[in-house]
Length: 188
Image 1 (tube, rainbow, N blue to C red):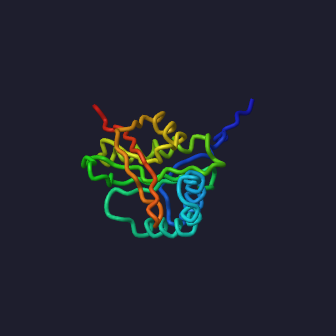
Image 2 (cartoon, rainbow, N blue to C red):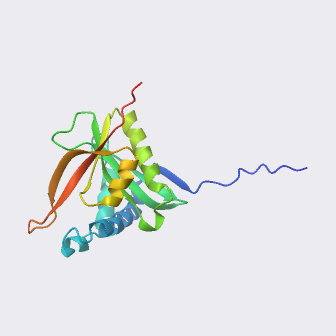
Image 3 (cartoon, rainbow, N blue to C red):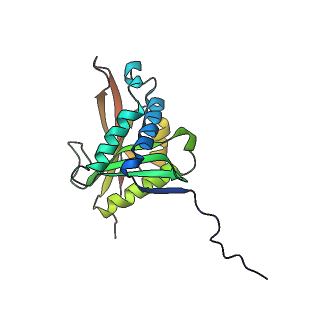
């Protein structure tokens, strides 16, 4: 009887460090998710500014000339297609502890949701942050964004009572955001 020694099915979902040539795909995913997330939360003229090209330019610049410090951009892929991204770095909040980090972006294209990409991105980001010495990670989200809140609380984040009113237009329109925190330090 012959045995099949093929490697079997290959996973078509992965997470890896972003490369400069990923910038257009990250820009497209970010623009798509931001338009969805912020529709009805920011003025229409602000929503119209969420275009893939400016986001892509910023990511390409950041990946080509990375800022000092522990900043990272990871991408989720379905096969070869970038379908999501997570950006992390040191926490920027004035009340942040020195060993706090933050997730400044966590996006998965709507067509690729509920396939584990968000969880893979968040887990990979937390692993890297923990290795870099972070003890906690924060994430800011619109106060009324129940979908993201549910995902993050199921992943171990919880509100810490902090909020901010982010200016979202030249006219002074503001969006209330809340901060969620997860302790990630190894207790061993």
